[in-house]
Amino acid sequence: MKKTICSILAVTCVCASAFAQTPSPLNLDGKSYPCINPDKSVTFKFTAPDASSVTVDCGKSYQMVKDANGVWTATTDPMIEGFHYYSYKVGGISFTDPNAYTFYGTGRDCSALEVPETAEKADYYTPKKDVPQGAVRSLRFYSKACGEYRRMYVYTPAGYDENQKQRYPVLYLQHGGGEDERGWIYQGHADVILDNLIAEGKAEPMIVVMNNGYAKHPGSTDSFDAFEEMITEEVIPLVDKRFRTIADCDHRAVAGLSWGAKQAYDLALGYPQYFSYVSGFSGIIVIGE
Image (cartoon, rainbow, N blue to C red; front, side):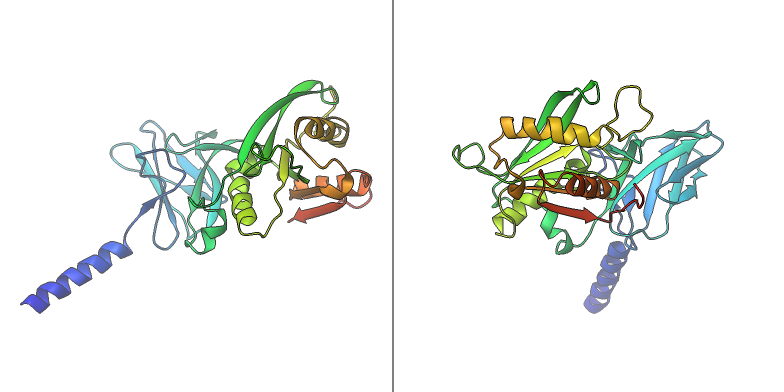
């Protein structure tokens, strides 16, 4: 009898584990949906009792099904691990999810979820209590090139405020298309990654500057035509004035993701007097410019 009971309990535990659902780490506190299923599919729920049709778009569009209480549900195919933007569409109008945090991506505010990686895979961007933390500062400045006030984010490594005599190399880091200066911090965990790399001795302590790559001259229809002027004539002098940088090209690098990689290449190749190092991640090069 005891063996039978133990067997039943074991099977029950296995079944419960197999069907466990985990709320997305990017949900608001106490919100259960969207949730990640054991096969890495995602279940969404959206309340819209008067709607006749609701879809959820997370890279692929899924038609949702309404229950008697007006709650719409859809479960996706298995998704790859990592960060995903999504939105709901009701009557042709897109909505963010009131259950999740909102991020700027794909050129607009949208919701996001994260399909968690294993602890081992996520180790490099996981905060650790024994790792000294750097700081991220928001700096507002007026750009004559753009004719407007703008904002940049600046990461300073652990010990920056305490070590007043130390100067640092600078990395200018650009976001991908459809995102902005917040992307590397809020979506990409760049500050945590840097903290961990520096603590492990895999990266030199550095200052990292993140700007919005959408920078145009007043009245222009080109969303990027003021970017290089803004960086070289305004941002770099301001950063060198406000922060303890090593202010020469041998201690200055530029990198970017996707469209930001294209901007990084353009800066490094067009202004070698400013940058000695360049890197692009999933980047593009436009031939003939």
